[in-house]
Length: 287
Image 1 (cartoon, helix red, strand yellow):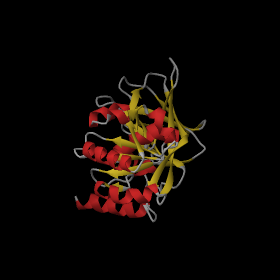
Image 2 (image 1 turned 90 degrees about the horizontal axis):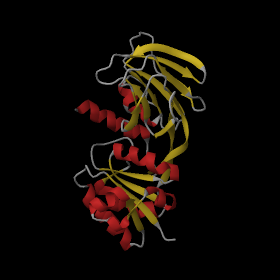
Image 3 (image 1 turned 135 degrees about the vertical axis):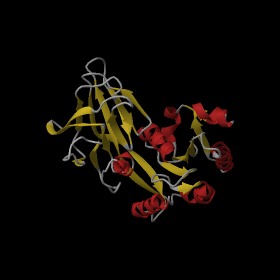
Image 4 (image 1 turned 60 degrees about the vertical axis):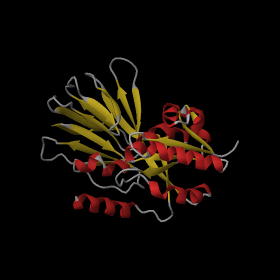
């Protein structure tokens, strides 16, 4: 079987479709088979290169993700179960996850194809909704799993356990369980710590807790966080990476632990999380 590279596209980015077509042509001319998710291939005029992700991801050297951090989060949930590394190409503002700017893509690809980029492994979470009615639901996350009240609900009362040991009980607007990757996302906005993404652990951060003593808690990678909500309001939700999730019913519990899957990100030699952090914080303070 010949070489194969995946292409994941965020069609909400104005230049993404044109760049995807250019990329697929570039790869094809070099004898490399490009493959796209079936649902977007036709929309960019490349229907013949599309197919279900589960049919091509496992045999793919890596996937180029054209969009931003949100696009990469979605790609991580879909492709990480197949061990497919991701090369994030930023078509928006500077993010923590993407590696290249769109203008740098074709200059960097020969080095990537020659094996010159390194693979950085990122821990993922699994969040399981244990239901009183029906089968459990399992979700995979790279950033975080968030239990939150709806826009018109009152605060929720949270009971938080690590394994079977009760840790905290308080009213709040919600609770974030994040990976180190997700520590610079919603958790940071809620007052959580910045954590080096090379570590394997969970950070539990309450959202607007109605308590003076409620703080973030760092949890070991082998431990599970169990969240019980008493009572559950009709629009209480579990949200995964800010992109998908479900409504929680009375009696449901959410259990979050380290997933067996990992996200593999392609990085140039010398890539530094702290350099990216400094750039991101500088950008935030300059606005």
